[in-house]
Image 1 (tube, rainbow, N blue to C red):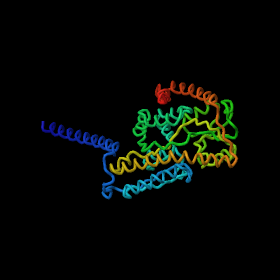
Image 2: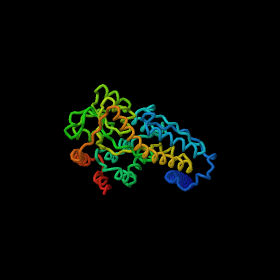
Image 3: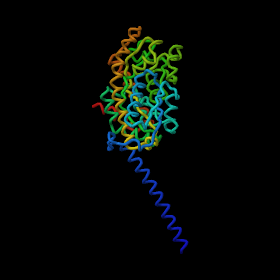
Length: 356
């Protein structure tokens, strides 16, 4: 009897420890999701642990994304009392985008800043966002980023990969096609080989339009265009300039087939280790940098376009009929992918409906 009583007490003690652990995990997550109540102006950061964070990117050192990353780093260092230092490593110094996202997931890299579409590599539902011609305009895309639909995708990234999106408001210029010939219709795309990122819905969209695809590393795209390995690439207008894609092609078609953003990705465990005040400073700095980036990229894109024109690059705007023809083909492909289980049923149309 005495032995039974001891075993029972031991079991209850273990159960109590487990419950306590679960409570701690829940409290940690709840705290990590808050970070809004503390007054950082009067907060004493000297009591906090210091963090050295490396933020990787794949854009050129002079690209507006990289400049915004440095703005974020400067603000974080100043407002956290020097307890958070972010070192910016652009131009794929830490590897390609997929390997950097994987490193952030594993915790071997603290932060990565690049296209929000990389989320679709790890979250099935997010694949729908990389289908060409899904978003009508900037307002439509902004509504999506602030919607529960996108919020659910970002939560899936935390749950499945341990990666948190700290800020998603870094709106890029729409993606267009840098190509060796003018594109005025769907037929003009057929037979061309285009560099696309290693994202399933990008490849599915391109092949649906009759394009051949090649997964060339971002940093090697210029050489691939120059050597004729690919005939075209697609990119935001500012990147077409900073990566010099226009030089070997001399032609850019403003299809605006994808609305995209740059997102600040961070290892979620590390985010949870920051104090509430540090999280608030980091989040606000990332969002402030995003606001600056979204406005700056519009200005520089116009300047870059003029410079490219001065250097002999021709720009074309497809007719509404041509864009509609391409959009109809993509809608058919999206329905096919949805039926096969690529993402949950109704998601493509739910996102389309946000424009109404």
